[in-house]
Amino acid sequence: MVDDTWSSALHRLWQAASRAEEVSALADDVYAPLLATPGVHLVVGTRWEDPQILRYMRALRAGSDSPVITATARSVPEAAVREPGDEPVVTRIPVAGLDDAGWPEAELLRRTPEATFVVCTFRLDHRGWASLGVGVDASADVAAVEGRLAQAVDVIVACHTGIIQRGREARRGADDALLAEASLQMDSSLDVEETLRRVARIAVPAVADGALVHLLRSEGPEFVSATHVAVQQQRALEEIGRENPWLAALLARRSEDEDTVFLSGPELDGSPFADEADAAEAADAADADGDGDGARPVAAEADRHSTVISISTLRARGRVVGSITFVYQRPEARLPGSAFLRSLATRAALSIDNALLYELRRHAVLSLQEHLLPSQLPVTDQWDLSASYEVGDPMLDVGGDFYDAVPRPDGSIALLIGDVCGRGAEAAALTGLARHTLRTLLEQGTDPGTALSRLNRALRQERASRFLTAVVATLAPQADGTALLTTCSAGHPSPLVLRSDGTVSEVLTGGLLLGVLDDVSYESHEERIGPDDTVVLFTDGLTESREAGGAFFESILPVRLAALRGFDAAHIAESLTQQAKAYRASGQDDIALLVARWTGVPPGADLLPHPLQLVRTAR
Image (tube, rainbow, N blue to C red; front, side, top):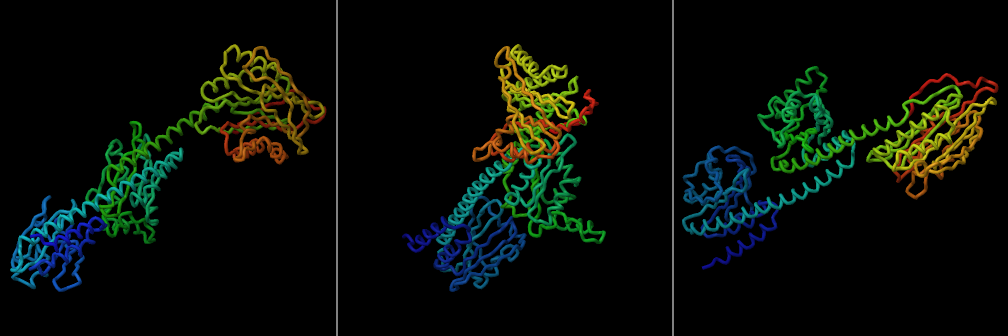
């Protein structure tokens, strides 16, 4: 015959189990139906951590509406023999035979000493076990009671398993979201140290309570960044990462290990992460000078949970780039899994390696760019020269902009600036050819138009696949204190002249691009400039810087230049570069400027070449 009352209760129990977020939420749906079973006068359940740590005990007696709940963390060594295996175990024990040393339930059951204790012990997870039992008298159908206990335990285990599974799925979703966010944050910077700092900031407190990041150098691990949820522990953790020999030796030993390792308990003896007693002793020693300002070791703050650390090697593209050390002061259930830490370490390592590769490429490109530009500019008391160069390509291919200033035999100076189409190795080679060809010709006294024609011929003979633009301007001192400005252009933006009175004019020039047609000639334009007049040569990276609304910097360049009246060449060159850089919302071309301010010579002065000195050019 089917017991409809128990069947209905069991059905309600399964429904509650499907909704429960904690196993303890099932207590009322478990205890009341069992207590309604004929012959049952007490229901008691226990929860154990490890074999012998009683976490809590809950009991409900017949005729009572309020359960007795004992929350504890008491060690019951002799209870270890009760620990079940993988399958639930149902046992019948006379209450009179229960030993208090292993049965904390005995005290509650002795009110009816002739009763029998029917108990089912079962494992919930790897961290502990539980029991559910009833006190029955002689009128009870013990076999039926055992069946109901087994069915109730089935629901409890299934509920706990479901909660764990849902927790894992939620954790997995949170981990995936964290990994995705970590990748976005770390990949958004190509600065090595900033990337490493972001690794630490992302991980705390979502992953751990503290994090230390080290970069692997040829001489060993180099501390870069640390963070901790407790503000007062930030300085201590930084000191550990920077100076602690225990951690440095551990990181050096693990530099080639791929698996994440967790260390706790005795494994941390002698370390700054040792448990509270050792940490407090170390802190007291640090305060021995009496100033009370010693940095308390990190583990000294672990007032409830033992400290655990994990170390993950950061490996990318077959090489180790560093390590990340996490510090945990939280329950074991909240520690991240090894798979998650490996994934985070892999993403961090790739971001760091990308930043390192970018840094190496940036150094190589800038070094090559420096060799394509003059390291020094000539200076006399007749002119004030300066230059500025801003790399605009975020991918850091070598640009094709170049400039130079060349003293000539007749006492004049030749200014040249140019721009090779495109970027990369081929553009760099053509840049070197163009600059050195023009410099050689102008040093020999060749006039600007002839120098450009001969460069064009050389490019055609070399079958250059790229074209370039250039402008050459010579400044020749005159007896009246002015200078003759002779300008010749090959498809290049026209220079500007800032007069001493603040007006700005454009030098009107024209000419065909270099490297396009054979036998091209170039005409020159002449005009006079006076003392404190300034000639500004530039590449189109300056004028084509574009704001978000679509306007080019070219439209406001004369106004911006006029506002720089009275400043020296260095200030003008740097100011215009930075203004264009700040102005542009789009455009990635390099910006090159060459500025010459004519200081003038007294009328009738000797116009022979003046002694030259060299000053380092700005880059």
